[in-house]
Length: 574
Image 1: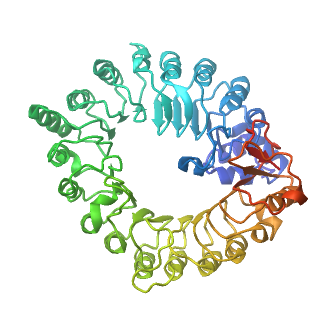
Image 2: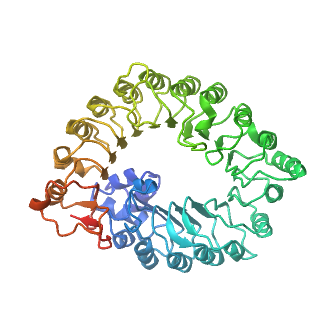
Image 3: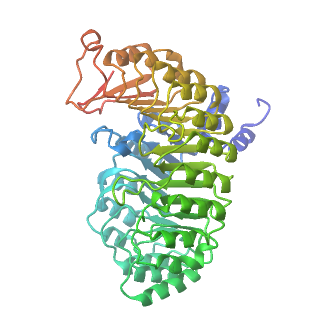
């Protein structure tokens, strides 16, 4: 494009919304790199230690939207020590100096302090969105800075965070003149909310379309909120339990006024046989129904609601729905695109769905592209049926209650079933395996899963060959998560060039040794190899004395920032 003026090239680049496309055009030539640098408005950092915050801030001074992820996914399962790192403070400091026009900040699995929130509120006058997901270390005091100072805020999203909840005073800090809010989610907070304050805030914000409240919000308060905000599109309710039946009737009439409601979630507590009658007015228009936090809903009520939601495209439920309940879903929701069936643990570690429910879903919902399924058992025949009926699957995560259980009908490994999945679902990008599996399944994955970007493995495989099949065959693989598998140094050190495209590798309770990790780190300087121990420290170990010592947890990732300096004593960076 040397014949086009720079303004024309900038205009063309403005249509590139994919991060991958942006990264690709920046590598074409120096001129394109400079133009892309000037026009980039969104930056996504999948690992906060993969690049220096200062480098990002100085390279993209015109940044509007910043998304950063910190701790690896296994932090959600308490496999990463609490002091591992992932502070947002360096990112906020760098952005405050170089990117004052920042409008959206999104952090996931990071350590956020009240001081960080105070700096955000003071440094970015144009802040319109703050999203914190699975973060920790901040309190509701920090939220007071955001509420009182960010006058243009449109979105405040707090999901699954560990918050020091010191009360709902933060909600009272929004000025009376504040009217810009479009989305508010605070489901992770536990303290009681002043209903009058929340109702006043809702009434002042005419563009509010998304509201997810915590479990303290009563039927009475929710009814009044819906009267004040009938244009809500996405609602996460509080408790649907009340001692006065009159309030259920009022809530029913309030739902009748919400003609545009498309998504419903929450339902923290619900009175007996009240759920279905109350939400019935909105069932016909719902596209999304998330009930993973409400295992106590009566099964009959749940099925009555689902049978009146023929337009559903997204459904989250717990396994108490049972196979017969999934059959109702399959016969009612032919347009379903995403289904997540979580384990309830309502009466102990049991599971209520099996391969039969999966067959019913795949038969009735051929448009599925995302499926998460916790089950008591799985068969090869069921997996083959899914592969045949749902070829558009992009994400498939299977969690078996017994992670090494074979096919209960044939007593064979589930290799052929998952092999059918990777052969039949050509666009599959994310896959999690469960059940008795041999190296054969990894051979299938390496041969057929051409678009696979994320693979999660647990209690599977026989030899190092299984891991090598995946690394050699999956050219687009970005994240590999391995737990309790017999893979060791042979697989880890087979081909160093594979790590040039792999974004991260997590291995815990495998056969990898300290010596193997050190050998990998010595061969590739752009890799950060972190060995995480339950001991106080493993620093000072040399290759020879410790070469056969097994590494408890290994986290390997590519970085252009060099080794980090904030690792705790039980994390050794090799």
